[in-house]
Amino acid sequence: MESSILKKLAIDPAFIFLFILILIVVLFVLYVNVTMKYNRLKSSYASFMRGKDGKTLEESMKDKFSEVDAILKITKQNRLDIREISKKMENDYQKLGIVKYDAFNEMGGKLSFALAMLDGNNSGWVINAMHSREGCYTYVKEIVKGESYVELAEEEAEALDKAIFKDAYDIDAKNIKGK
Image 1 (tube, rainbow, N blue to C red):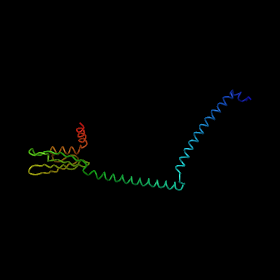
Image 2 (cartoon, helix red, strand yellow):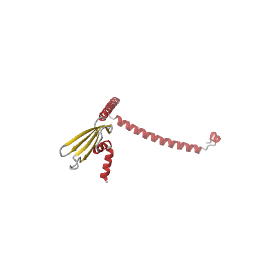
Image 3 (tube, helix red, strand yellow):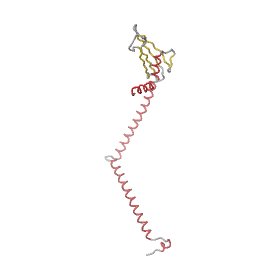
Image 4 (cartoon, one colour):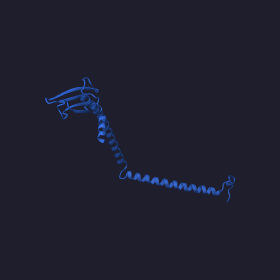
């Protein structure tokens, strides 16, 4: 059984048979792969739809969307609240620096102190309380943007620096404790 077409094309019928056999094997592998994917998808769909029909599924999706909308509304309100709190905090005392010292040589125990209280703009007060045998004297000096219009004593300047550069003092204190 020889074909005149195959003779003219010079094709051996064994090659055609082999090509068709390989094609059938490849198609069978693809079929098995697609069937497995379909079964997994069908299983996922069945577990998703378990106990639900189209109506209850639609209701549950509406509930989820309304929950998302509520969360978005709460998030927007939280952002507004945070902005408002941040604005209010700019004027609150955020930075503190204190230095204890002996104001007079005859006194011991470091009962005198200089306290700097600053807001976020480095404005605020330096309070100096000097303790002596006769009594305690307290002075307040205004600080505007980290500067005083009145000359500061050494301890007051140190308290002001501690308040302004609080992070640097914290790092130094940690390094000293670590050694």
